[in-house]
Amino acid sequence: MLIVTALSVVVTRSLFAIVTLSGVFSLLSALLFVRMHAVDVAFTEAAVGAGISTVLMLGTLALTSRSERSDKKPQIAPLFLVVLTGALLIYGTLDMPDFGAPDTPAQTHVGPDYIERIPKEIDVPNAVTAILASYRGYDTLGETAVVFTAGIGVLLLMSGLARRRKEDEEDEGGSS
Amino acid sequence: MRHHLILRVITKLLVGTIFLFALYVQFHGDYSPGGGFQAGVIMAVGFIIYGLVFTLKKAKMVFPPWLVHKIVALGVLIYAGTGVYSLLTGYTFLDYSAIDPHAPVHGQHLGILIVEVGVGVTVTGVMVAIYYAFAARAPNLRDQDW
Image (cartoon, rainbow over all chains, first blue to last red; front, top):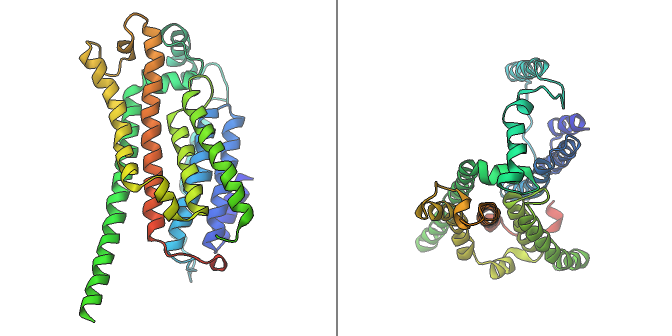
């Protein structure tokens, strides 16, 4: 179903349908994450991918045009690049251990250590939260700073443009 | 949106529930999936859905832009402030045991809670601010435009 949705995103020309389909895609991949027992990631994907980003894309659509410009000639080079990258990625997954295999690096190095230490040192049932907020506190602080910076950036760009447009309108009003 | 009676009624019912769920995800993040980031996004969704259905103007009356901008910075300050507090009390940066030196495990609990609040506040602020920035520039659309 994921593949069908992705293909229909490529084929469809109406941007409104594409935005909706990408929301569907996010929701489906959230289901996939639940299936793989990564509930925290699935939660984020469902809230951000299917919720917020769809709304923001619709907001952007309202600012731009509703349908995609159709290309006259199909281009070979991008297709070749995409197929090559996809083939390399699939080749890379061949080396990955089986899903849930007990002898993977993720299960043998820090994983057991965390699982052993969390009940003693932090005593929080959700190990993901404990690792994110305590052992990896610096990383999470950095992520918060990144979100902060992104927000500031958007605000600067968008509100600056709005002010300039207002000034333009005033200029036109003054000259006419 | 004036004539969309069903949408308006359902939204009124849902917004409160969404906020409640966001708070649950926020403060129950230690015990169940979720945490500051997810809670912040859900909280922002509450404001965004309100803005979508009841026009941006009303949403800005509920949650004015200057407050949103303050909140964006406040969250990072809460997070970094926790680290600075632990520095000042003689622990390493972001060592939550500093919050309750007699029971370090309890301190860790509190620390995670405070830090997650910081994350949630910033994410809420940023998401709502981005939505305001986009929506303020879009002209008012009629329903048949879609």
